[in-house]
Length: 255
Image (cartoon, rainbow, N blue to C red; front, side, top):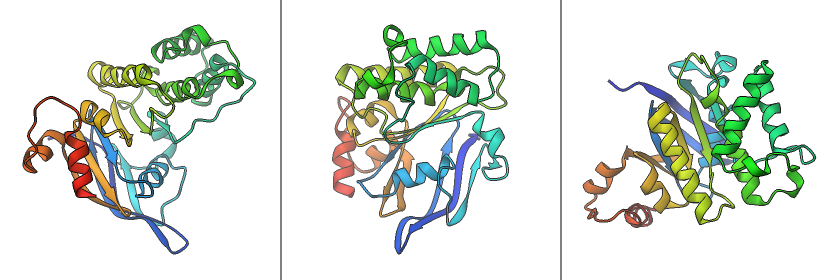
């Protein structure tokens, strides 16, 4: 039986009279690359903010590896990383200094360990040569790469009690085609080699088709589909030939 990394029960959140998320019950298995899809305003980012405890739900529960997020918040945050929308940094610190600060906020104290982790992360996201430049001169794409590096921090912290989970909201915003390919390959590598679980929200459906093994589709705050990607497409009669664009055709027909 597969281990459940993230489970929500009847998760709901309103903004005034507007129901952003309604009774959302979701299961993400350990080792998934789970694509979280929906139109603008469907409730994706609101859900992600609640999963990262940046926003309190009006109702419902969130469990991470079976532990209630509210009750075990500090422990869960040790192995949960996230990027929500546009990353924000201290503009007059360098990329290296920003990631080092985030590492210290995760209670890492060894300077040697922090330096090693930061160097590895910056190299992985293609910022090794620009690590000591100040953030205020970074391009949007470079900031996005740094945001992904900060979300991946738990993947390189030794002796965690659980395998890390990384939640990425539109991670390829601002990236050029090479950057998109680089991040896709990085996610696949971490998933395969380190068994990292990913929840990824994106509008790039062709990328989700290449990347994800399971997808969930949210519409008007309600989860309407959660399924293995290839099984879903075959059930709906989509002819699987070369990859790309099958998911887009299915999604557009559904929405």
